[in-house]
Image (tube, rainbow, N blue to C red; front, top):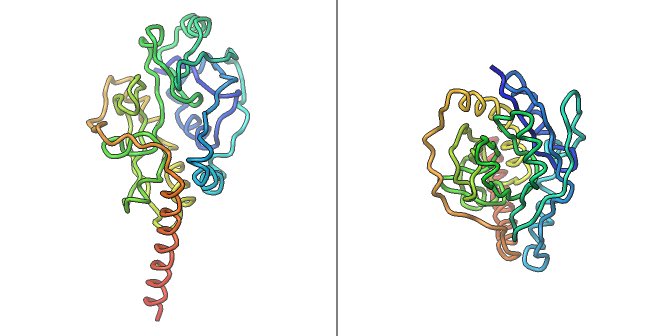
Amino acid sequence: MRLRAALILDDLSLARWQADALSEALPHLDVRLVVSCNNTHTKKRIPKNLFYYGLGFLALRNSLTKRERYKVTNERVVEFESLYEGVWQKIPVEVSDAIDAEGISVVIKFGMNLLKVDKRLEQYDILSFHHGDPSKFRGRPAGFYEVLSGEPKVGVIVQRLTNQLDSGDVLAFTEAEVVSYSYKNTSLNFYSASRFLLREALVNVKESRSLEVSTGGRNYTLPSNMMVLHFLFLLVSNFMKEKGEVFYEKK
């Protein structure tokens, strides 16, 4: 049985890794509706987080995060501007009505930032990716604190969205290798690991099953400039250590 689905996108586009995940999951999906938000934005604290924005530009922009236009076939498309309630985005009533009218059972969130799950949306399984093991690392940025803490792996989950950050039922879980001297390679690893997770999550939705994964980890926020400097020093130190060990082994 294929699930009648709606997609939430930003500007009718998605990242390459999201397109790959969707492609792998299509045998379990009947995408009837695409709702595309045209006003998603993130309030940036430039002075406090300037160095992180620079780091993210260099490390998190890669072949898997490159955005592409969603290829519409027979799906109904509804473009809208979200409402804002503080940092939370809300879907307007007319968009909820469109989801209702299509008989949707599962909503896949590839766009918007923090989505408020109001009473109109509670009836749906809203699936969202999170790059981080929620038993240790909730919030953002993906992979940063795992590298900083010397973790060997980054968790990747598909969760059932709630109004509590990264605390919904976990429907699929995997791990990706941390490259201790490269944030860019670490990010490539966890985006690559995301490819098959949506498919697994949809199977678990159909079987009314979730995984026993704790969601009580610390809620992280964007790092300060001083923390990013420490992070960069750590990367260089780990790189020198890695190359030194390789040289010693060859010798």
